[in-house]
Length: 193
Image (cartoon, rainbow, N blue to C red; front, side, top):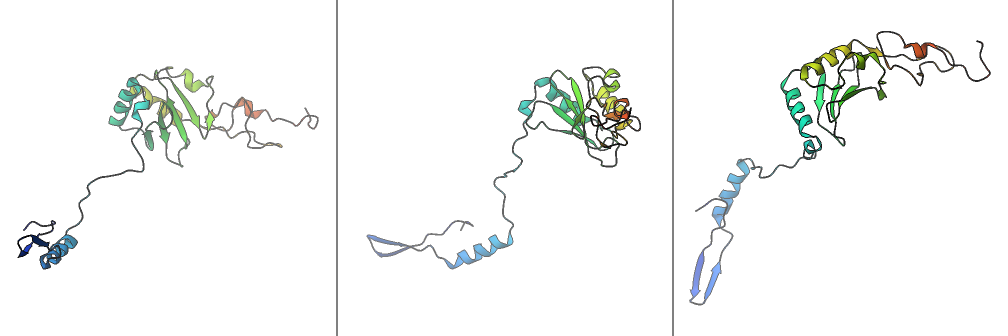
């Protein structure tokens, strides 16, 4: 008797007729055993799908592997690519001065920084103090540490557009607001100079 398979019994009434009985009292014992044992998972499905690492070029895939081997500064993590061929490093802490900061590392290991959906302009001193290409994980860690020394520009401090930013805002400052946002805009014809 093998568990899980129906047992066939042949009842011979006449030589040409066979009757197969599928409902056997022993089946109830098998059913009880199956209820006691947990089910075996045969296949696993994920709603997340396959990680799209194929979007990354070979250099970025290797760089991603290296980044995943080291501990990054507090609350920074590497995200897999999603809809673009970039690696993304994200600051997850809402208590950080750089909350919602994202470092995008593009093919060729070039990078740019976005903070709260504001692109840090290429003229910013942050880019001047780091190589244009991040070729080692140590350079990434240095960039993160330098980035944590900044805070988001607070925008115009007063006037009719308080808290808005200049079109030429530096986005990142050490304190207060950037020089471009210190200049308070006035609506045309309604201000004193």
